[in-house]
Image (tube, rainbow, N blue to C red; front, side, top):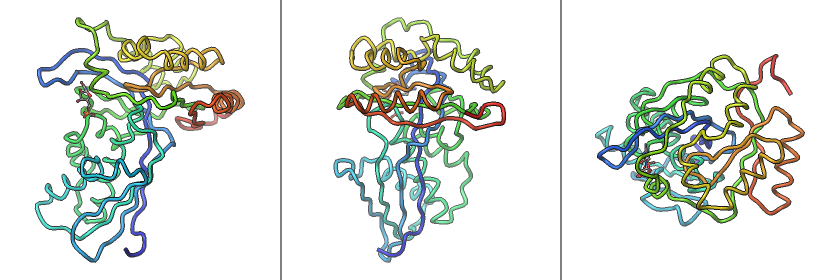
Length: 297
Ligand code: C5P
């Protein structure tokens, strides 16, 4: 193994809205979702190898296998290039909780495509990489266009949105609970419940109005999948109630079980994340969006 060649961060995401509109014949669902990156991130390092071939290592041994989206993304890019490429060793250090609705695996895949495109000098542009990414997972394309974007179709049609106004974020997870996204989608009722209309959130983002963003979150019913997860998993329901009770409008991220709460108050975010940690819950203090002169805190 030589000197580190390239290090890249793969951020987690939260869903500020997730509206499921219909079922497709291929088993996927049509949706509209507003995604936002958060600073909680995995780290990927790419090392030159003298020998040809791909070596993949991961800080979580159970994820160190050829099914990992990092390995599959590297293979997909190599196949797309259609030629043998120089050897590389990829080391993934996980920080994002798995099967949590935070998009860790998808973000790792996008980061791999971005990094190896440079590492191998392939010259693919962002749209080409995102198309490759879409074949690996519905959330992968978003990570080429974040930090804030609207995704439609099954998630692969991405429109960039203006950055969110700055807000503190508390991410929290019930201990030891991992959910399969496929199982959550399968449990949706038939007919599907009426989806939330995203216009108030999109308007709030376009206007950079953080009061309206918080009001959107406080209004509830912003994620169709919460209708499945919340009643089945009391720990998720409890976390959402706790965050709301402590004054943070909160919602489920993706198919969960991670939840997030947002607040303009640094003190409140610190206090809430510390309290959750003291209660033995997995909680992270983060932020979203961009500071502007009007919304510093
Ligand atoms: O695309 P990805 O592999 O991340 O999706 C995981 C699972 O989530 C799919 O197999 C499918 O069951 C479900 N899904 C869906 N509709 C979407 C995205 C995901 O039904 N738009």
